[in-house]
Image (cartoon, rainbow, N blue to C red; front, side, top):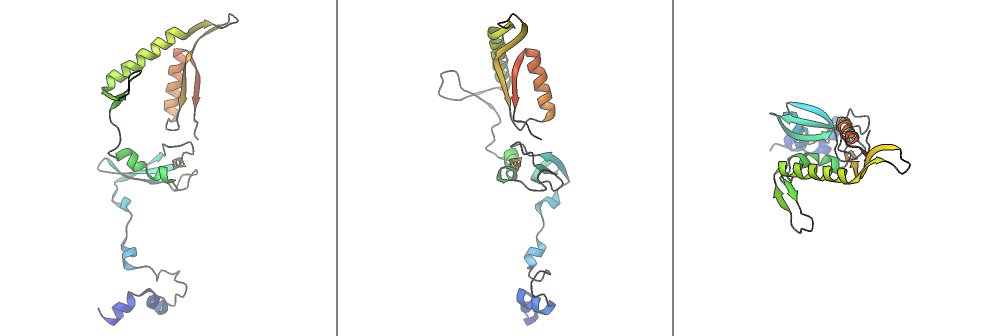
Length: 189
Ligand code: SF4
């Protein structure tokens, strides 16, 4: 390596040569740093989304390549978070793609100690049967003042921050139709 190349590879020498005493003018940047590229540059597109974890609702950009998610980063255009994500939000990519994610229904029978794998259709049937049974057993046509209420207090719903507006709308519609009046949500933005 020639003497000039050695000097050029030395940040202090570059600073002196460029009169950049504070190194704020880019002379301290190494070649390797200058060559670094964000992993998202290979994406076909970025889709704006919202972090599913909590009620803060930080903005996210979901980077897609060949129809598959390749990365999820903070959205600098979000007025809520301005590009920032906490460690949970920054790990959303793993939530979506991680091999630890459960892809099947687990069921533990009343009094049971072990989880069983059951088909989704079976799980849906179990939920529907229990909702129907509870509603039938706890249905109130009138309250204690003989006022018509047509409701059940045997079922309550507590929604999470991962529910969006449209899902909450459909849930409320379903519960109202079923006579379920205890509907609460960890509301987000
Ligand atoms: S990034 Fe963190 S603070 Fe923001 S919504 Fe997600 S979990 Fe909440």
